Length: 73
Image (tube, rainbow, N blue to C red; front, side, top):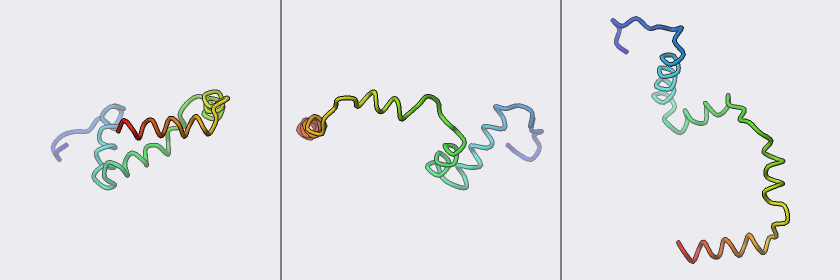
């Protein structure tokens, strides 16, 4: 925004846009993303989801899938 434009600080979209732009300018895109992640607690129970996803998965299965992926890429 230029110096002649009034900023509506009560508008969340405006503040968010300006904040992301300022962070990106100072930290770069990757640094901005890491900074924003510090304030996002996420949702769900990662530990429970991981346990359910990996229930009964053996190391041999994981290694076999990795080997299959290597063959295709």
